[in-house]
Amino acid sequence: MARKVFGDSLKNAMGKTALSDDDVDMKRTSPTVARAQASVLEEDKHATRLIDPSSIRMSAVMDRIDPSDGLEELISSIREHGQKVPVLVRRIQDGSLEIVYGRRRLLACRELGQKVRATVMEMTSEEALIAQGVENNARQDPSFIERALFVAGIVRELGKTEESRKNAQTVAYRALQIDESLVSRMNRIATGIPVELIQAIGPAHGVGRRVWEKLFKLCEKDISRAQKVAGDIPRNLPGADRLNAAIALLTASKPSLPKSNLGDRVTVSRRGNRITIDVDPESVSHVEAAVRELLLNLLDRGQEGSASGHSDDPIS
Image 1: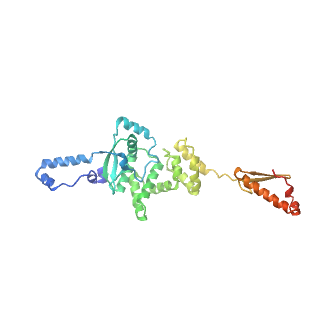
Image 2: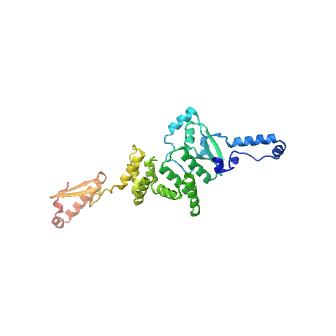
């Protein structure tokens, strides 16, 4: 599959150097040596290396909301049986290594403090993203929102201009093997729901596009409220129930605020000739000073203050 998608780029990734003049002469004069060299190079195409996992960086486009979720089981498996399946990494322009797929195996080896078995290839960003999408669809069951976030990540990284956006969408539907029209809808949903709300809900495996699209439309109406409800979603619920809880919170009518002439910190009530002022603890000293000043001003007015009747009203 790799050779079909990426052609002969594997040769350079494996560090093969050009043959010297002596090698060329030997190849011409010794068919046996030539066959041996060809055999070695063919074997090298399928060879893996043991690499320090700290030297491999994560790519900008993630395919899981939380790659470390459930990682303990994989760590235990690798500790007991070893790493059976190599990860794929690519060399980028500055010579460093970047993960293409196998993030969880990479993280597990980091946790174990052991080298990760990896295949190294030279790949373009587009080739790497297509390989990442195809591999992850084959090896795991990504949820709808994880696939949508992957699409949004591809569009963000490769479609930074109007001209490159079309190519980014093409890469996305090739990577996920989905219809082009669905790429646009998935990108709209993933970018229209606040990231903190998506993280609060989680992958929500088994929930399809229609439910996430319903949440997206609610977020469109009031994005600031959607950001706030993220903290109100119970974390002890399964993912699908957290998604339904988010929809319920955004569907519920906003609570009406109690009316008050003086705001929430001070309330004034009157019964007969008694006026009662309730003040929050932080405002007591300020309100008390203001009331005393008002009473002094009224008393200083003499008859004018008495005529108003306020000076005779006891205050508690």
